[in-house]
Length: 453
Ligand code: CS2
Image (cartoon, rainbow, N blue to C red; front, side, top):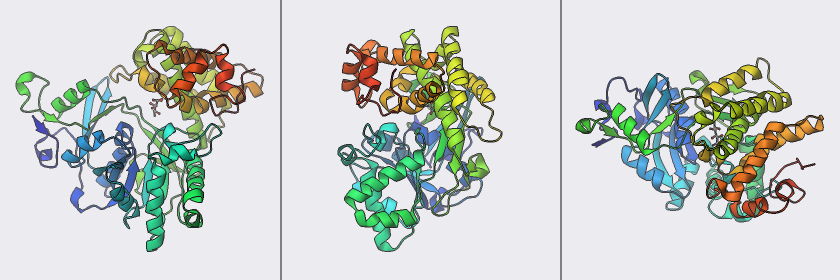
């Protein structure tokens, strides 16, 4: 079977969309930390569309902090990969060309620093997941965690080289599911600089910005079946006899047709014209970000823990279960929505309708266990802020309470090993006589202003 690469691109079936720009003549303008499936289906996809529309020099160098896996998938393919949109109508495949290469930070640290320091680099973006920010329970930088291979070191060294060379600063763009992700990144980055490169703090403040973003697209982890279906779409029917026609893509991602990106208009220097290809550039991201975290992600975590407890495997199965669907509706419409200060034109009832339809997409196979991981990093912004806000106004949150009970059940090991940076401590707390206090009480394990009554 052939492998997707610049050489095999021309032979793909006509219905597979592909880059319309000359990739070789474009410079790298973006260095992205955390080049997983989500980045490939979202920001890299928007950036590819912007270059299809005529924008130039926004190729991406992806950085993987530890794992060489993604470099092995992408580099032999010249950075090319497929985004396959799955819906009731079947699969629509597009080859994305915006990634130039992938560097593995633990293997080539100097190359990563050089990429951040390169004159053509304007944006350093991040999808390192919630835990990648290395926060301690009070939300400040945990220097021990940050010391053990995090993006902070590489960004700092790259910025230092830029400052020494008299180059402009960069935009640091957090694309992770954190409330006020831009402000958090700015604060933690400054804490890191103040400890390790204090002379750079002032330069950072004057030359770099950290806009807030709301990012949204459901991207399940790619499976072998997905890779087989994409290979067939890139070649011939999914049939043993036609294997010669198929074209293997080790880096493909499967996603839903929907996508949204809301970005605060606060860039340090030029940026891609993402708004020409569907992104929203706004002065205030918070209303969208809060709605997304508390409604979409809040309902996702609820379906994950309650769904696993009820014996389901996928999101579409959980949302088809009437009891779970009504719990998700209760969380979104009656618990989260009343806590959100909306932007003009933002319709939360319609948003909840659309989310239910997206969760029900039967062709996505989004595993509940994937969403269940890292609960300690997700639950504060997904549930606890909603809880605190409602209780302050004398309202109860039965759906979130149910979710907390199901999370504790998960932490007790009933759904298999717990995947969370605090797994051991969480499991001990969940098995203690009073799990709620051990997890959420004064001095408990989660960062939150909410305390159980
Ligand atoms: C999910 C998100 O895994 C999870 O925690 O809730 O990855 C979710 O699919 C995305 O935020 C959707 O934009």
